[in-house]
Length: 413
Image (cartoon, rainbow, N blue to C red; front, side, top):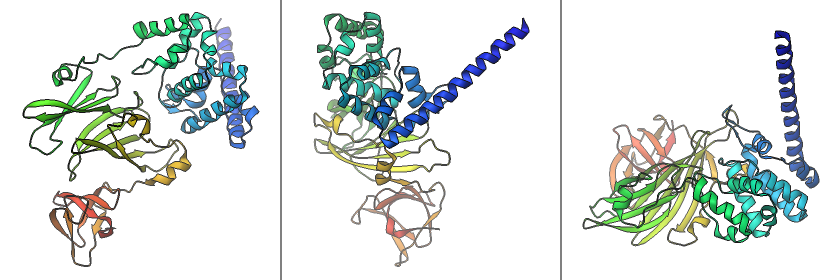
């Protein structure tokens, strides 16, 4: 009996190894066809089901490592939908839907495939892909398409479904998806009593009164609300997104910038999957709110790869009704990233010093030569660089004074 069990075990191991080798071979074939833009070969080699798709492009939860095509997944998915849109062949369209069967939400590649599939069905009016399914299969696929930390009902998509499939979608939103409990109005008291939000207190407009910033907690939504204190009464000034990208990231902190008035920083990070931190700079002037820029700190999953600092210029009116769709995020293509990113300097120690022919330079409160002078720093003095984006670097002196110095006055030791 023991011998039989051992033989069965060895047989299973051999099958698993064989499947793994075949999977690697298939991935190499897909990579080669993508590089050479061999359309027919690429379409045929593209994954047939959700598990295979995740093996190619997703995150391996067991090893806690990315799959081989993880970093370039969006480029492969874009090419896949570009090809099947041109082919207009039901066989490939059905294959696209079959990948959704028994799927569940995850960030990055899987989230992106959800979005592209919904976009494909709506823009190409391919609702037959859902309407022609039996109820059980349709429920599984609809669940995948709308599954997320904060599911959003798509009325436009629902209009394309027949009565039976729309009823399934409605039922999913009523019973299956976890709903965030939202306040019924914009009174600050409603948010203070709601466990789905956290509140930060700052004087945003520099009037000596503490204002309130309300933000959805991780995986509880994508809302950011700012209440201005007007003689003890908190009035809603603006309601917008918190840049958590529908649960792909989480808000790590919200703070005021040092040395810059009326500027709020929303800091997000991508938990548990390597380094991806973002800072969104929100500037208030009068009644206007502007997203000035985004600074991203990240690295890819290759061994010994450098940490990159990427700055995206935004300059977007946050009150614009189309604001959310205009926000720029880090390009997936490494080629495009190189245009806006640089390697992070090793700024964790006092490895920079001041050099000025006048014998000193000014430490200023703001990023310009007319800004208030905080202190004078002698040539040769060591400093710690906290933020080296732009022409004015934010630094700390040996006696812990912080402010801005023009980068032309800073040299490496």
